[in-house]
Image (cartoon, rainbow, N blue to C red):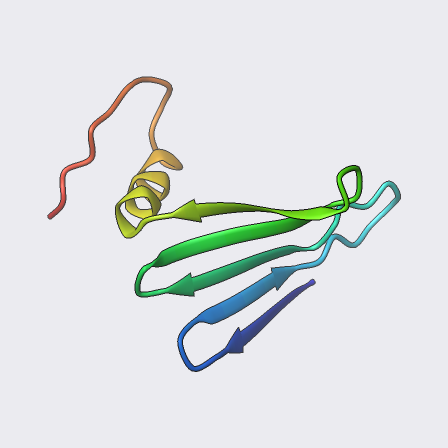
Length: 77
C-alpha cells in the first residue's frame, strides 16, 4: 500500500509493507525543492534512520536504475 500527501513545502509518500510476515517498517519519502529524505523506523535502535539525497543524487539514482553494472558520471542535460 502507498499513501501520497501534498504538504505546503513537500510531497510525502509512505510505503506500507503488506504481505506475509515478517513485515518491514513503513518507509516515508519526503520530496521538496531541496532534495529527498527517505526515513524508516529502526526497531533495534528505537530511532528513525534517515537518508538525505540532493537533487543531483536523486538524478543519478534515477539514471542508475536503468544502467548495467559499472561506474558512470551522469551529466545534466
